[in-house]
Image (cartoon, rainbow, N blue to C red; front, top):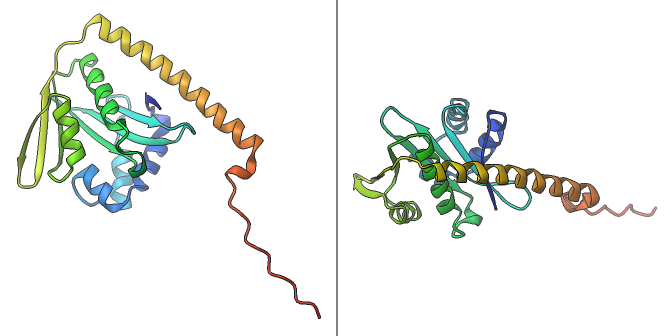
Length: 199
């Protein structure tokens, strides 16, 4: 699995990921049910130069999880979403750890996550990450104070970021060449031909 920050040139990949979420996953990600138009408008407003959007990629260089760190005046808000068939594999936990490191490097002194009280996986992730969780009227709020980043933290981020980018493009190349060598692997099977009646 490769995790790396996305750039403004990958806005459409973020849009496609969120629009592909089923209604219940949209509700858990955004704490309410959103239409395609509202999600698309949300993606249009993402500021890739200010905020951090992390994506987890599979062996075919496809996005299987997204995490966001949005900088506010006094704190940074985080949000997470992992595809249903990839849950339970620690992807959300790794995304959370990466965002916490990013928050430290950016000088953010407090982070928080808002999620629905029935989102048990998010509650577990937040608790394991040392966040304080409180719940009111069906909505939970988890927060954690952040320490200042060290030189070691910064060096680690730079090295891991470089490795993740090179790993992604290597994986993308393998997936691309694999599809060229075996074009039938991704093609839909042709429907059976109808026999032509004999006169």
